Length: 497
Image 1 (cartoon, rainbow, N blue to C red):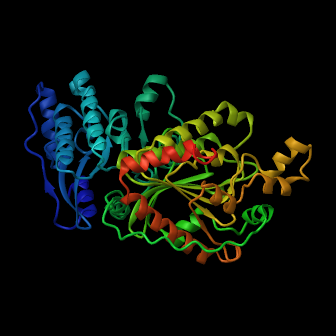
Image 2 (cartoon, one colour; image 1 turned 180 degrees about the horizontal axis):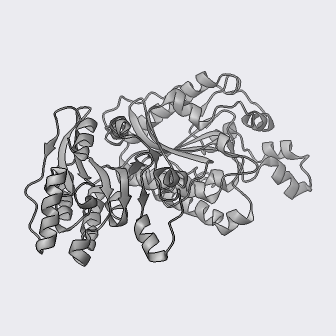
Image 3 (cartoon, rainbow, N blue to C red; image 1 turned 90 degrees about the horizontal axis):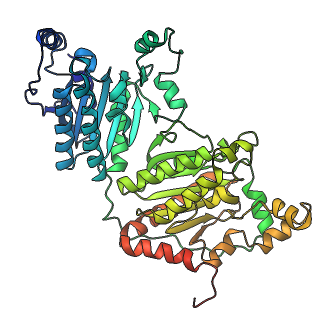
């Protein structure tokens, strides 16, 4: 079987693939080009470089389109582009998620500039598909270059690539011919793109089915019809001093966002990077469900933040990618805060740390999707503030939020760190104080400390998060948005204002 058709039929449920393709439109072709088309058809068993259709993926109806490298190097001309656009438009009209598999040298040189400009209409059709709130998943196969990568290959909500695949804008042979030297090794590979935050993963063909199914389980999960939320009752919280909570929040054994996902979430699909060439180990981004309720989750990862590599501005740009995904797909956004503070360095300044904090605050404040923030541990400075605005805020008992670590505040006010404990109390940074002030809506108890009972704590936090997702999904969107703006507009003002 043709390799592209084999990929499609092994990804979809057996026997469910139905072709959408009619005869390709006729294009002007001289004798040499006509001969090339005929030979390509004979060699590949296809009538064009693109195949499209529909099928079932774990019982769910999906649309699919793919290009085949054995037909004129998978190049895209007018006929292939028309087939792609027709498939995208049909998927949009029928409300279907769309899967794409690329394998192409790019624009078809025999058709020149006209073929080159086809990428415009393909990108426009995909933009309409995504604007309709429909998922678009991309699998970059070996090789994917040129205009295909720079159009429909580069627009996925989730994008993964074949191991060892050549993926790049300019083909290495063309580069060498133009510049007289080979392109550097290891740059145009799927693994390098993943390392630089340009794609979300490297997945063998046999793993594509499970990945796509898990992603669609989240992306297409119902947004309504969940049971009436039953938020666990608020326990009477012991009056533990703020400084003690801060010390407990810094324990290395304390569960991280990754452990919370392992213990309390389902259908976790990791995403990676900004999509613009940055990845920061201080934040993780994923799709997930909690008790069936879907979300985009972005969290500050305590394991990825070190003294040598604190959370940088790239982490916040990655967080903003998560915000865009939530808005595009109308999914709740969950932010998890756990940071000793954002990077304070020349590099962070020159890469726009302050500007990224401002943009996160603006994006979160105006996000149309439901939002939940989880104060899981340390909440220091602008790096924590950037992820706090939300419809609902949940805190771990020993979570806290402060403009600076108490030691820093002590240095500013007293010239040394010795007053940190009393300043932590005076600034009311602990979860119990934040609950009384209306900053936090629910505090999840630690019995007595999450580091001592990580699994039970994560399950309690997951239960509250699940119930809160049910709650915000059931709200009227306009009222929910108005309440969010009012919440922060009135915070700290005297009663009655």
